[in-house]
Length: 502
Ligand code: ADP
Ligand code: MG
Image 1 (cartoon, rainbow, N blue to C red):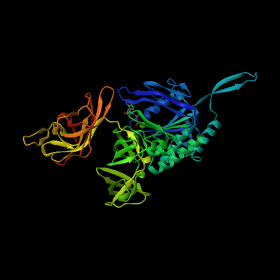
Image 2 (cartoon, rainbow, N blue to C red):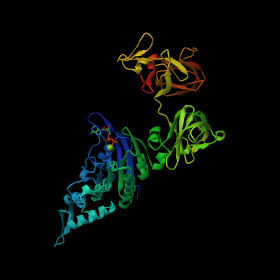
Image 3 (spheres, helix red, strand yellow):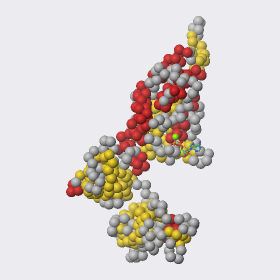
Image 4 (cartoon, rainbow, N blue to C red):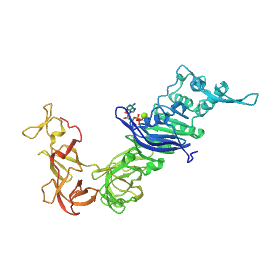
């Protein structure tokens, strides 16, 4: 059972490797006694490094680790009541199951207290007795469901059975904490699913703390009491599986956990958000005009007929996934993924409804303006409802323009960029505005001006498709001013949407 007592506490742990890689960046968290806690994140996010520091195989560059309230920074691994199960479980191939599990116990020395004939207590360091080892091994094998396998050679076991031997070997020492680093990673899908349930059962039987590492979100959601989502050495969110699934803190977590629709949206009023071309009621309150990410789970998009929908669109694909259909609906420029047990056919125009409580709003980490655009015959770029001068040679490093305006690559190839789709990025510091008409790439109105301490952040919105230009300025303007948007040629960053066929 989990109780409120903290067994492990990490306080501001960082680990910087000698080559300058900051694998773990100021991580603070606690683990409660008896908890099943999972570190979840993509490969390279610092999970193993964190686990190795808890086990004592690696030392933090800064920060403290407490075990039952005491600093264990200087305690070597074998003195910690912690055992680890790795993905690559190195069993001894020449030993049988019993000997593999008993191996550590045979080396173990324990303090024994005796009372001699005179009634004095004396302490001796002794090895475990054979029957004690027997008992412990039997108990461990029972927990991993390998009773009767004692004499079997480990090389005759399946992957799943071998992993169970590795777990038995770790729990035979009766640790307070079991660390498991992607222990099911080497197993096939079916075996992995079975082992997930069995591990959960072992956790229940043992009643000890499990600290588990995986990059598999489904595994984390099925098994854990608590999930710690990590990215780039930084904790993104800590919570129960339900919390993490239903209330992701940012778009990284939302994207990583389960299938999600993530739309760019704008707050248009009190608990009202605009995305996919419609104003929806929602339950989160953010300032008006704030740019937000909107997360909607595919199972929360409800399909209806066109008249009753909040938004209409066309079904462009549908795949049967066993229980439900996964359909994609085109709504304007956006695609909405929908899961439903009733299929709408490809080509059908339908309506959709999303309930306020199923719309999850997250603060956008806004660092630049991003648009989709295309190159014109004149080597300008159209995006954000306007047309801007740009440098198309950046699309091919080392290229030049010939006198007819074609790009000549460094290999001497001639490329026609007319109508080629590009991604356009413009930084927050790279946009200027002027109240002179039509001297920039597009005209718009200032719809928001937020003071950010030493500058203003402005949003200029165009008329036609309501495209937004967000930028920082030290000048003061007024809301509703009508302005031209000017972007210096060298500040427009272009990248090809796809490699063009030559
Ligand atoms: P995860 O287990 O989440 O995949 P790791 O903790 O293994 O991630 O690694 C985190 C980062 O630290 C990675 O960028 C990895 O390349 C780097 N790293 C891990 N171990 C070392 C090491 N001994 N020396 C240098 N860099 C390392
Ligand atoms: Mg790892």
